[in-house]
Length: 285
Image (cartoon, rainbow, N blue to C red):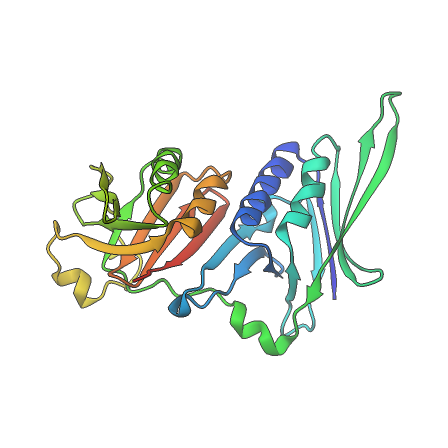
């Protein structure tokens, strides 16, 4: 297995660093899946059993000026690595002033992603800087666990309000309860609610719009088709699992979607020109 990438463009380096930093807010460890055309950060949480799931997809050509990889075989040309995204984001943040950053799969005391660059000095010269990020190689027999998840057969799909606005609302609500009800309908309305024995608070968002999935994805089940447009679909989620997504939204998505399966799961999709991030939040009773 071989992997080597080089980022020269400063804007691409900054963007890649923001993506990895966002991932680090969502999970302590995840799987980095490398293919000839894409990179994926995957958290294969069992949502049905209360786990959080994540799938982040990046087109390598939009970030790397040079990109070379050889997988385990010509038939299965992939590499799957378990990595701590925080350990990867630290050197990327530290090397923002570098003229070029190289990332390479190496073997030292253990398998590592080695991040190397030349940093300018005060005297006008440069000094080499190298960081070794330890990783674990995922065996092929486990690869099936890290395939792209299916979009749930949701009851409602709605565009989300600006994430900064949502973060401000959720930051206030988390002081009242650990659980938040997210509800929406097909009239472009979304409500965030806290309901306890002592207080009931609701924030309303209107005219958000609803994505048209019918033309691009045959996922709409009968429950969606038959439900009245104004009928609210809801799921209660753990605020502590929602908040990291809002805190780490440095991806600056051009669009954010929220799909809700009634009382089962909230599926949030952040879309950028060259990055897509899916986040699965299980409903709690």
